[in-house]
Length: 317
Ligand code: FAD
Image 1 (cartoon, protein in one colour):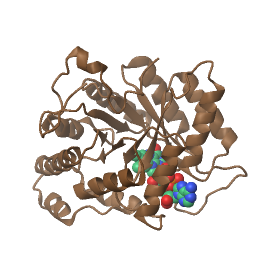
Image 2 (cartoon, rainbow, N blue to C red; image 1 turned 120 degrees about the vertical axis):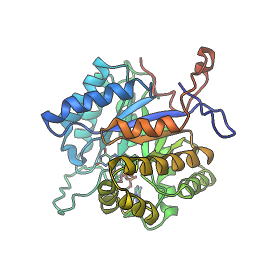
Image 3 (spheres, rainbow, N blue to C red; image 1 turned 180 degrees about the vertical axis):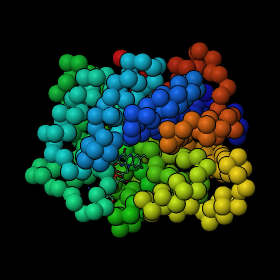
């Protein structure tokens, strides 16, 4: 538990991290060193990504199991629906719940770039369909779970989703996901604080009331920023790219990137963000540097811990 100590507000701030499953046996030890470092910051949860079409299902499930059995962390399992039937997905959801997972980030996933996509009969088309399916599976297992026990997150977009006709359409989709049972949203990466503030405003006006947590990526790698722009269509600020390019060495690059990330995260908190979700890329140092400079670490007295935080519904049994 932590409170924001800078700025005018003192509301509790939710903290979470994104990890991806190790891509090779050699990456496992490094990932676990990162997990232990992140665990020491007492986050509200850590999310585990999932390859569209279940490409890394086994390693994702293995990581979720280990997080549940060997750490104090609460996992949020990403799940994508593209290319899978409702029956297949219902089985995966049931397995996650049986393993003890109580938070799922319901996503559609991206179409494969080589156009090799399969559309089995009964495949789900949108994240909204997956949210509804999770709620149905949860209800069927009501002997084990109280209704509403599973926290469902969804994606939100500060800049237009590449396939969407407009930002207004993105808001309508977010509202539809809320109505289908989503509890909170995490945003795609963004580079300008006004993009997040504007998303919040437009969402609230349209009737979206769930917490919208900004997804913040430490801007410490030029290569990663360029790849992200390719993958998501989100363009980094040219000044930031220029500063990273001009940095003399990795140390300076990290200082520049961390400073820019902290500015962005602080501006999002001042705009009313209920927390920060850090995309770690399985590296703890940049994430911890950002966190240090955000002043989120004032311990909260035990009584105050009873107060509601945006992700308090992600509770353990
Ligand atoms: P949707 O909400 O289904 O939207 C997809 C598109 O369809 C949008 O253009 C939307 O406007 C449109 N749409 C949605 N519903 C309707 C409707 N009812 N009628 C008409 N149009 C509609 N990808 C992965 O593969 N693995 C991950 O682990 C992963 N994690 C992510 C985490 C976060 C926080 C974010 C922001 C994204 C993540 N992604 C991940 C990427 C995500 O899968 C892509 O952005 C994908 O293109 C869209 O997913 P979505 O859940 O937003 O889909």
